[in-house]
Length: 290
Image (tube, rainbow, N blue to C red; front, side, top):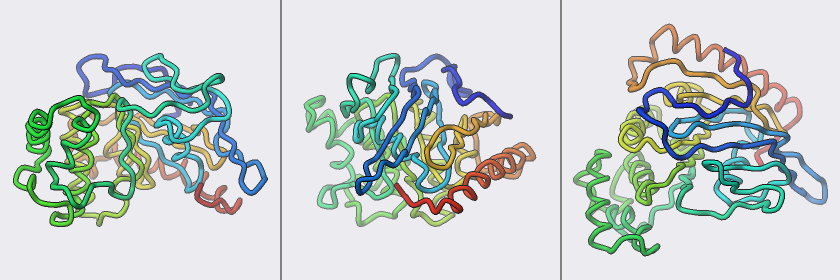
């Protein structure tokens, strides 16, 4: 199941036609100046993420996964190489830092909902502030998207009045309100218990099947990676680059019955083996979170 670290964009399984949101990470380097000492977080990293796919990113803690996400989002600059979205350069030799934009939306580990606004107001907030939609139009759109995501009935509750899983779902719907090309997820379900997480996996897939946005998803949960992803990019310990690209050849749509299938277990074994090798290297090197 080894594939080249760079896999050219093709149509992901489960989609009907080519979609916008193809990301190309080309020979990217990132060097941090940590207390006066240069630290190579990413080195010569090349990865193509297909338009409309769910690409799961796994690897040891501190290997540079979030550094890549931040570079795509426009939060950090890069030291070399280039990143493209649908063939347009986001950052590169003459522009080391991408401009943040509504075409790339991030959902972080820690929630970012406004606690003083209702869930409906939270979801409608972005397009109104950016002047893309009037308030009434944004509220109508938000209500429809929340209903599609199984959130009907909690629109007028506040974030603190609903479960952690529902709050995560509200955040994902809010991220999709501006019709982004790419959804960037940095371990969004890390803090959830296993039962809530399993519900959120199926909820995310339901949302994805309706929107088919490109998803760049960082996780340490290997079962999560295989269950959700079209492909799993297994990254090396720092400096980060793809070690192996795993094609998850299990048909979409998926539900939790696939977890007991022989193919799923075989993919898990292959992923665990590759990640364990890099985790041992990271442990021996005393790597810390970047």
